[in-house]
Length: 489
Image 1: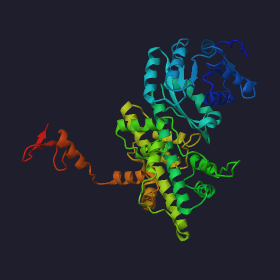
Image 2: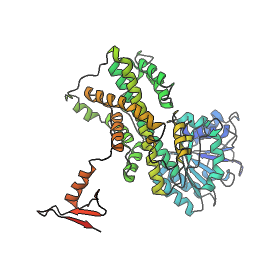
Image 3: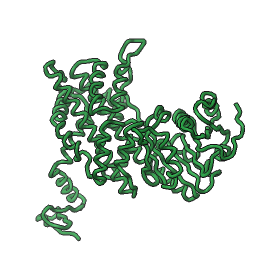
Image 4: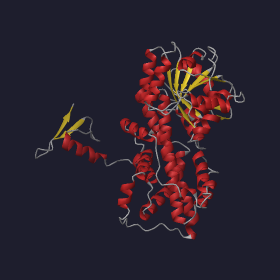
């Protein structure tokens, strides 16, 4: 198939890269009334899009066979969205586009990219008079097509041009779009990274609840799905709970076996969870729930290690819940799940706060919670409460200490303690449940054993310490017999 050369300035916006996500985003733009230029390095994908959707029923697509034609077809200031693989492919696409663009034009990366790469790319584009926007897009394939949550960074000027289009194609809660300008340079991809980290923790803790219920009650995946469906009608209502019900109810047509029992128990990952944890380490933020969820995926894929450990005796007593204790156990797991979810969200927002301070981004956390209420993978009913909490106090130091979460997490703690103790005795791995409890106890403790660690550091490395009773910096001369203490300036 050959396409005619598109007319100059005939498109409102363009999409470079027509894989599933790119094609669906292009269709979303066209369906919302934007004349959408489309280009793919492999012409066959452009041909497929035009063959399936180019009859005008979904709006106007303007296909191009070269980058030069693609850029020329865009109305100034031009907006070109890149939807290609992260890394070298993104850099290559940027260079191709920049060769034909003019000062004031805008390149948008809507893929998952490491925020530091986005900072570098924004600087590269700015040196050439161009705007570069790293935009987090959540919602998967269906979200891209019907309305995702969109988290664009970049300059205010670029959002003036791009924002109205993104707001229109995003998911909506009532009349409110699930899109907001997040902040400068890499801010958009930073918050999308943390969003995905929260997603990791949320998915893992739901899986832990499933495992406990199934082992403890001896029930089928479909019966667990029925319990989850009930939970999804209340404060645990979320997209991830909803799809968990669907997965657990799915039966293999050929064997009649629950599909979840046929899926290999190895959870893959594409890197955003690891990025979240690595970045949190560099910022000194304890995202323990996200970290344990990320490590759990690694452990699930460590087949040789799992095989080697299978013969080891864990000294555990199997978790078996009597019928008389059934409802209390189910409620304990529900409460534990709620508490662990709140810990994960609270830790994620802590990382966003730390990133905003470190990189001088003016991130409105209430606005973020608001745009995550629809369209995105971690959408959940309690995001309304998170929005309210940050609107009441934008400098909130700890989300889980704000109402209504403070009252609810304290109410849920006895259940979480019982669940963690039961799982530990029964040999059931619950890394996120357990780490959520430890984090809660650690963050509320009046005094931590870190005093001993700092003493150890001073002993072997003269790293000094502070005292609770005096101002100043101190060091003990540990090698001397009397071990005198010095005060350092």
